[in-house]
Image (cartoon, rainbow, N blue to C red):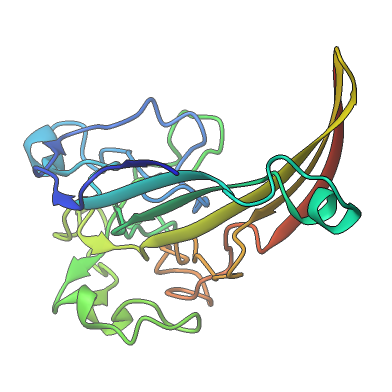
Length: 233
C-alpha cells in the first residue's frame, strides 16, 4: 500500500493591497473574495489586508492501495474479486476572505471601468462580521455593516475582513485490470468525486444593497460518479 501525505500545518498570513487583476469584476463569484476594487483610488493604504487566497490551514492527503489477495487467481471468484486497486485524495482547507461592498455608489464615483461595471464602495463597520450564524440563509453577521449615508464619502469597512466557508472533499476511485492477451489489458475504473456529498458553500452575497445580502447562493459540485473502460495495448 502506497501512502503520500502532507501534515496539517498553519500557513503564514498573506497580506497585500490587491490580489488579482479583477477580471471578473466585483460581483460575487464562487471563488472566494472576488472584489479587489479600491474604493478610494487616492488612498491605497486603506486597501491593505488579507489576500484573496489567504487560507490559513490546508491539508491534502492521497493514497493508493493494491489489494493483496488473489493476485494470481485460478478460479472465477478469485479472478472477479482479486487484483483491485483503490485510490483517493482528501482535500481540506479553511476559508478565504472576501470584501463586503455597496453597489448603490454612495461615494458618487460612478461605475468602475471594468468588465462588470460594479462600484467598489464599502459600507461602515459597526461590529464583528464573523460572529454570524454561518448558515446558508445568513453566513456572516450582516448587522455588523451599515450603509454609508453621507454621499460623496467612503465607508470605513476594510478589504477582505469577512471569512468565507472552508472546503472539504473526499475523492475515491477503484480500478481493476483484466488481462485479455499478452500485450492487451482492459481496465475498468469507477471514480467518485465528493463521495461524501458534502456541501461546500460558495461566497455569500456580499453586496449590502442586495435583498439577499449575506445569503449563500452558490456551492461547489455535489457527488459525481463516473465509470470508464480503457484498453491498454
